[in-house]
Amino acid sequence: MMYKIIGADQKEYGPVSAEQLRQWLAEGRANAQTPVQAAGTAGWKPLAAYPEFAALLPADALAAASPPGYDAPRGLPEDIFARDYDLDIGGCLGRAWELLKGNFALVAGGVAVYFLCQIAIIGLALLCQILFIRLTHTPFVGIAGNLVNLIITGPLTGGVLYFLLKSPLTGGVLYFLLKNIRRQPTGISDVFAGFRRAFGQLLLGYVVMIILIYLAMLPGVALMVWPLLTLARQQAVAAGPIFVALLGFICLIVPAIYLSVSWTFLLPLIIDRQMKFGPAMKASRRMVGKHWWQVFGLVAVCGLINVVGFLFCGVGIFLTLPIALGAILYAYESIFSPPAAPAA
Image 1: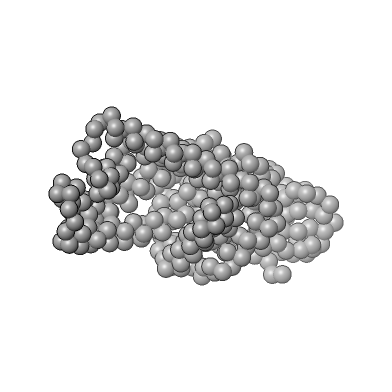
Image 2: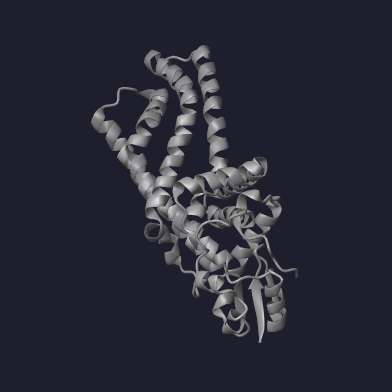
């Protein structure tokens, strides 16, 4: 019998014989959770699920191993914060492209469902916000007034609905893509796994993250809102208020970018590792902090890729979004997964 395995670097190795796989297991280059596919079968299972290898595993490893269709183990390895990494941005993007090519209908279809749901959620949130403004007769008018309305009323109206639906939906699509990356049995329904798997923690994590980012942005918001209010009342353009507003925007955007990048892996840690939102926020911040600029570079490149997708009449996003999300998750795997991997 011949076998293929998925290493911790998410690359496929094999086919190899059972004897070779036992040797890798003895050398610590494979473990109970290593995804294995036997020749002639379609699915991937953890190595512990194969009786021919179970006798070589310690009892605690067998107890921790999950059945076919398994999820990642809960929590993080004890030595995770002592590890270092070198993020290969090009490699993450290349693997995401290969993932999309290898199972285009499922991967692109699942991400398309997620994207269309996001559009619907944004539409509902904006509708709620417009109704709030109309019913409360918000006094600010004009372009500057509309910006003030958006800043003040956004978190209080449509934002509530947006958070309730966006966080579990985003967690779900990340879970869906991770299962594809790990060659686990996957279906479109996994896009909605966040609602049943970790709804409360995903919601809390996302809301707390947004609140902390918003608090960090408050000095910039104050600098920007004051001149906008002045312009809205005077119905005139003046150089002084515009300069202060631009300075406020800079003070607003810098902490927003820093914190957003620091918590890039918050939702994957919650949905995948079943972590509470507090430890997940700390873990993401600490690991990203080791090489913040590398993670920022990946996030920036993924953002530019999605911008290019939108430029193609919007439809290109259905191709670029799976690549961008996949690249982020390949980075997540390389940073948080066990380091041992067999050589080709």
